[in-house]
Length: 94
Image 1 (cartoon, rainbow, N blue to C red):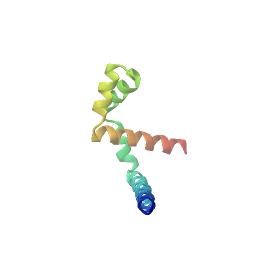
Image 2: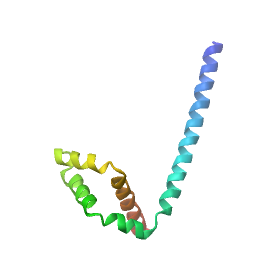
Image 3: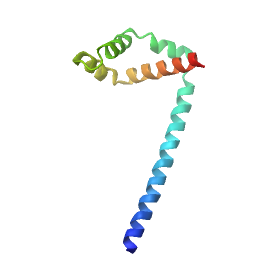
Image 4: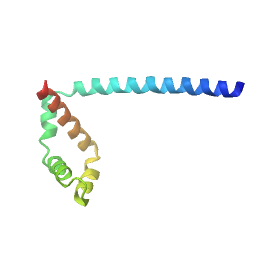
């Protein structure tokens, strides 16, 4: 019984620590996204290869071509493109 109580306490503490670390990570990501200025967002969005991949990914959705485009978008450039799109949408919505 004593071992079960100690185990439950350890799980509770480790879960709360993990949750605290996750919230700190989110705050850091928000700060980083605010550092991206408008000129760099527009520069990223002008990349024609990434625009084509994004268009293929959204048009072809679940087809083989859509999945291939998704795999190719899983690069640093593709992630930056998606962040820039979200930032532009956030700026135009407000």
